[in-house]
Amino acid sequence: MDWQKSAVALADRVTDPDSRWLAPMARVPRHQLVPRWWDRDGSGGGWVLHDGSGDPRGWAEAAYSDRSLVTRVGASHADRAKPGDRAEGLPTSSATMPSLVVRVLRYARLGAGLPMLALGTGAGGLTAYACHRLGDQHVTSLDIDPCLTGTAGARLAGMGLYPEFVTADGTDQVPGAYERIVSTVGLPAGPGLRPVLAALVPGGRIVTALSGTTLIVTGWKRANGDVVGQVERDMAGFMPARSGDDYPPPLTGLFALAGETDGEVTSTGRYPVVNVAEAWELRSMLEVTTPGVELGFRTEGRKRTAYLVHPDGSWARASAERTDPPEVHQSGPRRLWTALERIRTLSNTQGSLPLLGARARITPDGVVHLSRGNWRASLGERARR
Image (cartoon, rainbow, N blue to C red; front, side, top):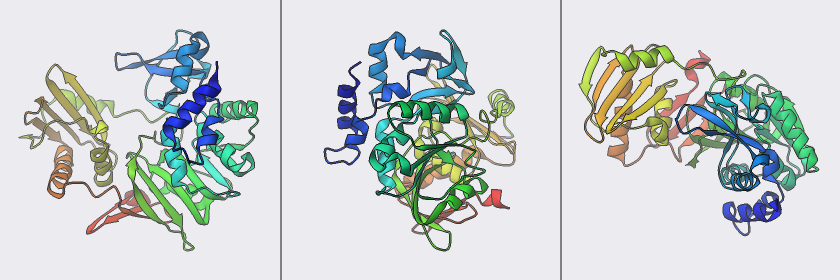
């Protein structure tokens, strides 16, 4: 495989001609980091294995395109799978799309000699790019999965790169102290964010997504321990951090209830049914205002149905043909569809939601305080109590 030409072409596509990330990206053989990956099987429920060695042309096309490649589904590593294997569940690790890697690295304001932590090793791409830019002696990569840190370490060593790899749950402990922290997993506001903040030295800078949202938050650590910055006018669908081999099981019982029963309250919705998971700003604002909501969506011909469920037992179902006003069923202590409609009304009346560009202040206890104009919100406060 003539990977050098492909890597240069990829770098040209996802960076600017004067970018300091152009040369690092052009020097990394990305195909070596993702020799196998999972792809949706087309039915919407499962995953099929792709082995690059059996299809060199397809391997090069996938590895040097600007796309994320899923390398772990549930607890199933593509690297450990056998030909013909299938996987079920949610993606739990990937080789992040190169253009997004470049964006978050730019947000980090990296400088020569500054110790950097890459939180979420994945396939090792961001770590490799950072090594070429900063020198591997300044780069540490952390992941909860020893297979990921071990495999990435071996593959980067094959490229002559020797950063430090740490296997740990970043929501529980982060060894070391760093001037820059770049997280490519969504970190939970509250206690799960504390160890990361503690590892950031005063004057240091963090870039992270927030779990349950697509928000990218950046900020500088002050002497009092607060991190002060903003929500970038950018979004990312990073996987949420996990503390075990897989994510907790979904609220399947509540989804079944939402799909089969009438609600305590039935009404006609104001707005068309939307797939909230794909409407990133709506989804993020819903997490800010009503943390912990899980989402479902399906289509049957012209009929569209959305499901919202919450660990407190609340659920909502909204169904309609195309853009017709939906029939809405809701039960439990919260009215989840009503909460979503309040957000959509705010967006319609203000012309936008206040999230992107909001000021952010993260206190040492991990609580994230957001503000923009007269709007205020906090994430992680309930977990603190």
